[in-house]
Image (spheres, one colour):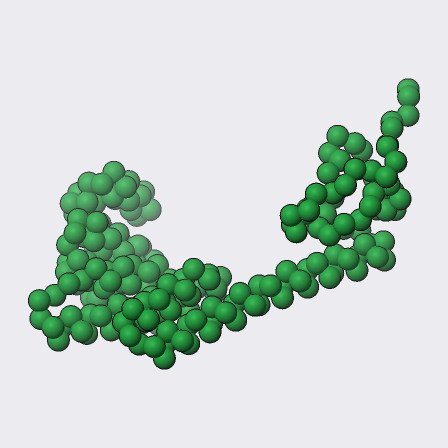
Length: 220
């Protein structure tokens, strides 16, 4: 099954979307649960790339109803958010329903991702703001702010730990803290402290200074 799926995927990436759809559909009856998701996403995405948003919606809605929301993966939410974001219907009631789903799927995509991506949080906030759902927009802007503050606290805590290690003379396992002296032998920490002025880590944007006294290798 794996090889057959990858053949369908290669066809998709070659932009032969009709062939990719046909190949993926032929594999669905014999695919296990894991490949069912991959094949349905491939079919839905192929329809979307062709500009057939309605067929893409039908494919993914049927798959979501079949497996249940609890079994939907991060990439399912990502594709569904793309599909509903592109749907444009003549019927105003149906369009309003689609617009509502177009807002909820990016939100589910952002919350399902444990990596907590700031760009995704911001895109959800902007989508709610554009739809004039200001309470939800405010909620997601607050989440974005909290996430950025959390990342700043983590960076600050990392710098504090680094300074503590330097102060007590402990080994520094983090390569970014090694002074820029790659052409010289690796010295013990005590030697670094004697020969180098200690500055904040290189990640702050500052360069390590030149040695206080020039290190010269012993002549053979």
